[in-house]
Length: 125
Image (cartoon, rainbow, N blue to C red):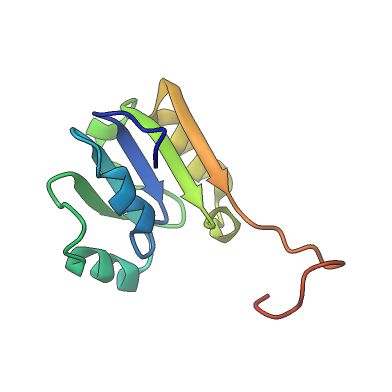
């Protein structure tokens, strides 16, 4: 992710397979909080040797909370939710956690899909 700088603190919400987590942790001094609700994905992330565990903290979250450590509050430069927002069952609670975690000049990147019933196929829905 080219727009991150050295020493960036990032939050990957719904880290899944770790694609973004790995990329976010490549910069010198980077720190990444990778939250995931799925035990299966968390196990995959723990076993993935490409993830620098010295830079990445894996966090088991819940539907109601990102479960970030107190030390993360107000330190996050960049929070990313990629193809995860539509799964969130308590968006107000999660967005509150994000607001508290982000620095005052921190950035939130939300990428999600919307299936247009008039244009999208029903496959995969």
